[in-house]
Image 1 (cartoon, rainbow, N blue to C red):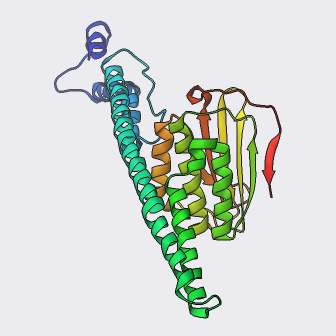
Image 2: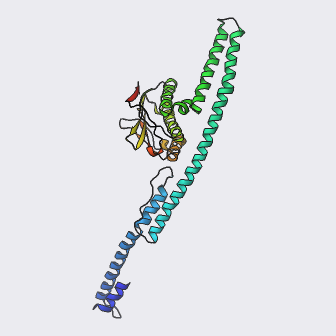
Length: 313
């Protein structure tokens, strides 16, 4: 408006009454230029607001690094800064709530595993011992009953190990993953190429448990949904920065809908809680790839003997 007033005051432009055609054209042209200039200036001024609205629609607390850049220290910049602060607070509160939930789940898993091992396992063992004295050796019906009890006992032990892997507590992540692979191959019939480096540092207990659960869920998804004929599991240290764990299958791939499943959301929850980066995508040669990158700031390094990868066919 100040520009228009200056033009009227200091330019030779005059407006008569009734207005002449030339004067009307000049006024309309000036007004058009004025509106165009305002449109350009307002669009530039409100561009950060449009980005903010788009980010609000797309924000996901399970995906870190979604902050917006504060370009100017004005009212719009203050709104963007407030949005970033809100994300910090929400992510912190979600991590705290998720950590408490997962700790409660793991405590329940330990209790169930202990009950299965101590109560059901011992009960089945007692039944098996009693069956041996019920009938003469070689009785077909007793033999079938004994086989059924042994199968049930093995299943109870398997479930107990999956609920709380003892090897994870006693021997660490690498041994627990190898045991998990062995169990997966036996139950699913799918072969796994396992490459676990010998120089992986010792991680915090909570970090190792989260990594184990993510790999466990990945293999469960392969068995249930992938129709895969083979799986590759790798775990290695990426220099001094990260531990990289990758599960790759040659199955039918992953759909957009399946990425929203409860199992995959649980995997993302666990990755966020340990500060790791988790990506779930189509593999280069088909199938699905799950990649977990754990920062070594979360690790407690222990002295280990140097060595190459430990491979299993």
